Image (cartoon, rainbow, N blue to C red; front, side, top):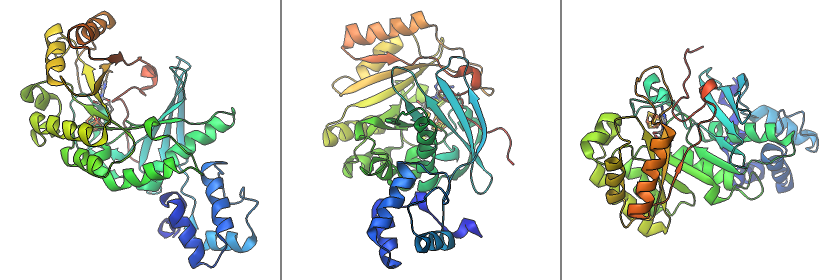
Length: 349
Ligand code: SAH
Ligand code: SF4
């Protein structure tokens, strides 16, 4: 069965080179294959025409090219957002989003099929958890987007792990995938253009700090009190707010990096000037930027998004009273359910 063969997208460049050494094949061929995977983004072995027959024979016998076939591709009427529904070998599906706004191209990629964290306003949380993605299923999403961009002579420069799933719940696979995405002979993404967003998995944040992992970290906060947070984010009962903030402090002290704090703005729930003051007080003294995301609609939650004027007022309070920088996330791709927290797969094949 092809599913048992090694997925080439699972391998780091070092692992691929070691595999070729075991096969007694030249490292030059391994290097060429790597370029085919992440530079040319070849969509078949047949397209890898510069590899000799003996290499092709080995690859065909022992490996597979873990491409993710597109089950559905949808373009937003805003002209900036494209969503891919991609199929995995076990027929599970995930979503990947290509965003072309704020003057740059960004891929929003998934780390799990579904999510176990159950945030009340998130469509992925509402669908529950099915399984972790492998490193290759994560890297292949980026290669998929890069393949689409190459046609227009563009290059993928930003990746956010903000699609389906909780990246730090699938730590090892995500970190291996990030290493592959950063490889200088491949997609060569800069560390500060890769962002991992977490619901607040404290052990994962501490491990990122201890391992000095080069990437941006975003932490989903949404409320500045333990009770308020636990009502929106069930995972907050396990990793409490004070513990989370201590981990964030350790992270910033150890790595010297600021953290992006995400705040989904829900009208009447967490969007008042006093809420902004509570965020400001909570983050005082920490290197931080707040990303405000007006709530996107999902079937399972009937909250209302904060109006833009109120979001800007929230932003002003953060700036003027706490000197805390923030951005309001542009609402894009909502008509195709490609906005933050809207990714879900309705039916299983
Ligand atoms: N699991 C990770 C990353 C994926 S979600 C995390 O939770 O951080 C990416 C961001 O979208 C998170 O900040 C999340 O809280 C937010 N989000 C989820 N559902 C949303 C919704 N319906 N509207 C706006 N933002 C949402
Ligand atoms: Fe999972 Fe993030 Fe959605 Fe929460 S917001 S359910 S952690 S994907």
